[in-house]
Length: 110
Image 1 (cartoon, helix red, strand yellow):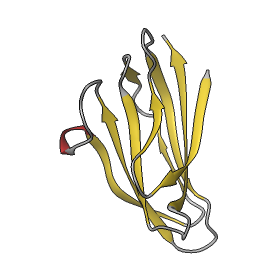
Image 2: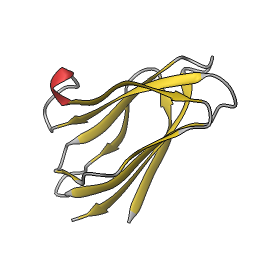
Image 3: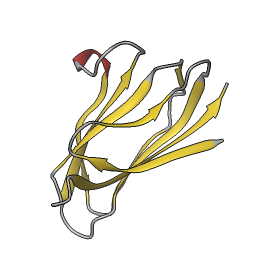
Image 4: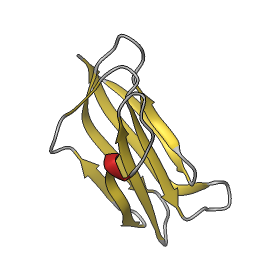
């Protein structure tokens, strides 16, 4: 099992991009609001190789997370082929160009 983790940016953050000649199975996606107060929101896309982020590949739209809460996406297994990617945007900016959200993706190579 492998992990990719990052603080989410208010601009597009492509957290996991599948390399050439690889296939990944995503087992879990976690998004945590690590702030002690306030809310933050995120949008997540699963994007096919050669495509751009858009309404057709959005799977979470501006989901609000209160401080200290974690969103878990683990009910479906997602298979990504070479060039496919998982992308996020988040708000509001905490003054650094990032939000107070951290995302972790757990995956296996298949």
